[in-house]
Image 1 (cartoon, rainbow, N blue to C red):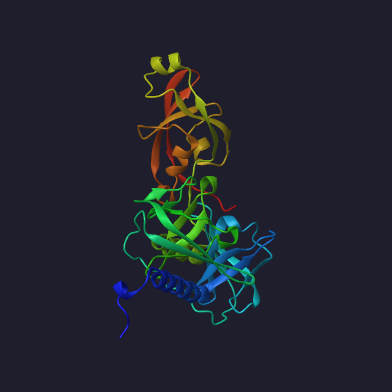
Image 2: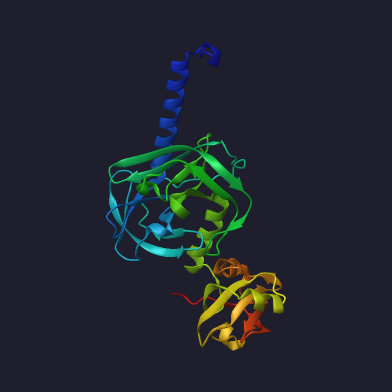
Length: 309
């Protein structure tokens, strides 16, 4: 008969926990790979389907000269099937090698305090990073306009080579992928986002993104002018570049125009614009409030699709 927890000494409890974590990491590492690009350090990824690897887009410096190191140490060439900077996901194709594909789980929602383990891989073997969920919230848009089903921040020290690695919950289920966020924070791209975006990348090679054809930067508006124009705030974004083939030019937007609102909602930063240019924005019309030569005007823009770079 196995001893119950109350029969175990503190040392035995810690040893049992330690062994369970090691077993969990070893199991997950069977599907993890190291991704080599032109950088000195490697990053991580995992086999999502036979011959398909998911990794962090930010960790890929270029689309060429990419290799994947498998759990048995075999180094194979990889090609980019698609990548999306807005959700920090990239999909690679490799030869089918028999490495087991990882099953992603939409488990119970992560909550602050939940134990989490990130499993990555370096050329010599697996890497484990232990921590907890520090922040968890509902759907959100990234700074680059990508739509993610959940915002999850992890409190752990991530080895840079583990970026693109698997995020495991306390049950040992793969619930996401670890990436580096702003100011060296660690975030988890949740499983539903990975499934949705990876499918589209395989099908199209890219994610459709809204496009105005405008270069912009934030600007403060003279407060007296803002009051005279009854602006909600003395802020907006000034147009510093116009693509002559873009939707903005076609709607009559000019260099020097200051965008102050989108469909009646204040625009405070360039990020406010990017957040509105997700895949669902393509083909939709938007009414932009503008300040031009000290006067209020407006432009109706039909959002286009960002050209492939």
